[in-house]
Length: 579
Ligand SMILES: *[C@@H]1O[C@H](CO)[C@@H](O)[C@H](O)[C@H]1NC(C)=O
Ligand SMILES: *[C@@H]1O[C@H](CO)[C@@H](O)[C@H](O)[C@H]1NC(C)=O
Image (cartoon, rainbow, N blue to C red; front, side):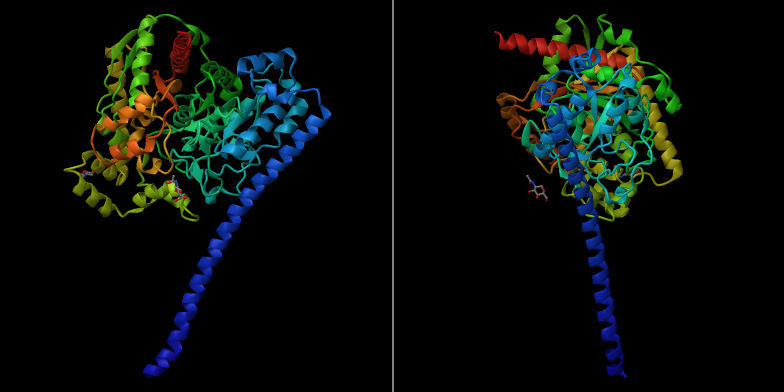
């Protein structure tokens, strides 16, 4: 009996084992082929674009493409409008430059060959505010016929059936979206790397991350391959790559610019809402882009957007302002260069006649742990993990994915053990448990609403027009962002508050800043504070920005402060180098 059982069972078990292995292997092969096809598609588009560029050059041997890409946006726009530059030359010039930059930084995910077709009737958009201007867009901004991959397998081979509202409006204004740019896997990370397209690196230092999630945009624009781009921001995703790469970026109030046609791996969350905004070399380009997008076409295509056109008067005003500021938010001690950037900017603004007023963002510990982290992970990370399931998880994301995937009781246990020694880590880990019931979710929404009112009341009490504060920097070494969500306090606060906020580069890391890192202890002296120092070490020469903030819906006021900061710091640099 015993022998007979074995005779039947052993081969059966073996067969079952072999078929499980076989299935697993087949699944892996399928994933590999899918990744391979996506990369081949990108290669094919690049080849097509290269062919188009050669053809254009052969037919227009008198046109110097390389000089076109050195013009600032305002001047480029003037030359196209005046007729001394043709839109086709400009598009081919930027395509050529973008491909060159991509080869160095790996910042593109798709070349939009359709953009060449747009040239056929571009003349009919002559009155558009962005007539003939090539524009880059982040991977997750829908463009008809192309995947919005978000760096995950679940979104491959699922091309957008129509243009997002922003792409439609850009086209109506005469702009030509011509390339899509790289992102971190799932978009909820700030190192720009995913298993489909690989890692994008920083043009200022190839050994550093360009930041994310709009990392491809930051790298491409700073590298000179695009003059204007659109990113999205839910915790710092426009501001971080802009600051890490040394360009400007604006995160508007959510839905000032339509987010219809913006793809995401965490749709449904309501605590922090994603906003689409422009990235460019200077503040004037951001303002031009906002002016172009805030038009009747957008308000008609997306009636949920409040029909508020750009207020040029507020943007151009020169009346002295009451400006709030803080140097240390109490959560992340700013790096030495972040502090110096803030203090120098404060001095310049004061000298320019503005009134500077010290501000304390209320309840930072609770705001970051309970509102930002618990709000963004109300589902315990389940929605994001669902998108990561079918394929390999990027090394940059493994720390987060492992952590979010832990059973609830484990997270609570770890949090309980850490609480007496590392209160910040305990609270943040506990927050990744999310909320446990619809009633809890309502409570979560209520406390955030109250927090927004509390902050606004504080602004009111101090009669602030605007505020400025440090911006995370300098750019990190590789593989650190996943362990440093704690460093998002300066940026993510303004997503939960839903205030418009932008970054302007004001200085570069000096040897003195780098030396000061020796004395950096952090506000909490925990593992994360130590990790932060390792992440930013070796940053001499890298750009450092500050953040400018305004009340909800006051993008023009925010841009006004940004423009002033930009002018003052440029003047300051100029006078320093001439002394
Ligand atoms: C974790 O958060 C819950 C609220 O969701 C709270 O009741 C509990 O005390 C927290 N635990 C620790 C260890 O902080
Ligand atoms: C980052 O992680 C990847 C994958 O684990 C590894 O190949 C690479 O060497 C790491 N880079 C650094 C600088 O540690």
